[in-house]
Image (cartoon, helix red, strand yellow):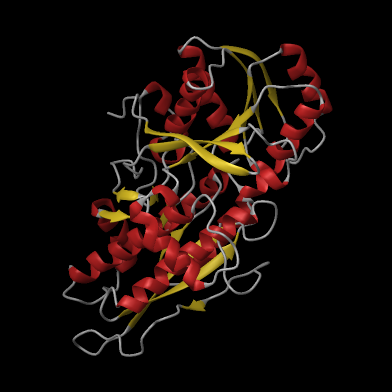
Length: 406
């Protein structure tokens, strides 16, 4: 979910934001450049999502510069490719932290990558705000399931709701809307996949559903014959997959080819046009994603029009709107820090950004943007989609708040 004008393989690309104005100086004639980093997979199997993230962040930066959002400040974007690998994400965080002009990082896509970046971000007082991470541990700690929630990293935020919300929504949707009674659950053993699958199982069984089997696969697997045999024997009403589209697309097709008629359902990691490209038998499958479809939001009309006008070659994908909002939230935090310092960016601006971001609120592309005491978005809207005639079609949207975050 992100893009620019050149393919990115390794290293960083610093871009002068389009529309920046040479006369953008404050009252004292001082001009400052603020760099916003982006960390996302812009190559590899998840690049469709990563390119959408990069493009949408660029659009936010371009808009801020064009409008002179902060007098005396010009923004630049520095996007890095993490290849969806935790060690690369950590290296990227270290590199960005070493540049004093970088005041925040938008990303990453993957929760497992975020875990590798959080400590670097915290040690350097550098804000990390993800438009896509959904693992609850990242904000609320390991004991959130026992309702012993504690913020681990005050520098970490996100504009995507958690898998506590998404997995529970999926479980309830499967029970109430799909009328499923028996589910087979598969996960890819990664941070995101296992957490989502666990949350789904908890809600589905709480409502009366039965888990007729579970299986763990490698995210690199593409031959699922053994899994297909087990699922077919279990005769489920549905199959739930915790993981991402590069594996779930082939998995779904092989299940159908192997005689399993039950639909496959997954979370936002599956909600991509590439899932359908990888799966000739995707018809009828389901996926949830955070927020409502931006195409249905009046608040997103300008974003959609501006994205098209900008000429990006790749679509904004599932996280375009939440990426724009994450980037804009960072920009607003910088704006507050500048305003609190008599119109100038202070030397210690970086360490002031997390505190400022805690107080940022605005009406964004995806709706009202604000953060709770854990750094989580207050927007818990989730949408269920189904593949119909070669495209994802939204079926149901709702806010899901049936849990205690006291």
